[in-house]
Length: 271
Figure 1 (cartoon, one colour):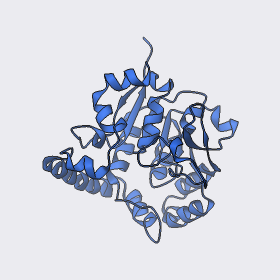
Figure 2 (cartoon, rainbow, N blue to C red):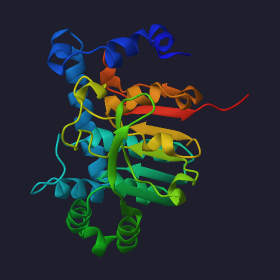
Figure 3 (tube, rainbow, N blue to C red):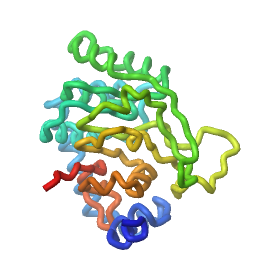
Figure 4 (cartoon, rainbow, N blue to C red):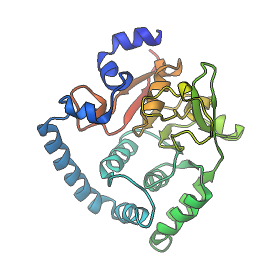
């Protein structure tokens, strides 16, 4: 199926992912109703309370990671709750994460084998310092997280379709492994090189897709994409995407939904 045929067959994706419009315009066009905002607010409160009791160390670590120039954005307990639910519901034993964060704690806790790819030595050191409470309360978990975070160079280049993309320089040892789960929340999504021709940047907000997912030799059982609209669109343009059933991030839909927080891809089971 060509991208034109795909767009024609998925009107909600046309409205939410492929159509160029600003967030401001999107909100003004009634895509988020008062009912939706109220439902989202109540759900986030419930999730925060649930995690305080179910994953208290995760909540404490999340708060620590946002101190003094740490993680930015809102307190995404909704995101962490969905990751936790996915890990507990699905039979996932191994995973690779692109972009370390509070989610790394959940992956290290619930996955038998886990690797987190990061682009910054400075962030890795700051990250480990901010979650150092785990060193005293859950030393084995802290050690697993520390061993799991690997710093690799971020790169950007023009792909075969002349689109500007970014990725990590993954070694063959990681590319050739089979992962049950791939989590996409990195690397830095905006162009880093100077004198770039922005005509090669497809995304309307100027972000670059992460193509590390497409460099893996084996298809993972489950893929979670945290926002990253450019990565999502690029993946839909690939042949690999045809092997997956998917749930689009709820806020991307023409009529927005609270769930899912991520765009979730599940590998189709051959009949």
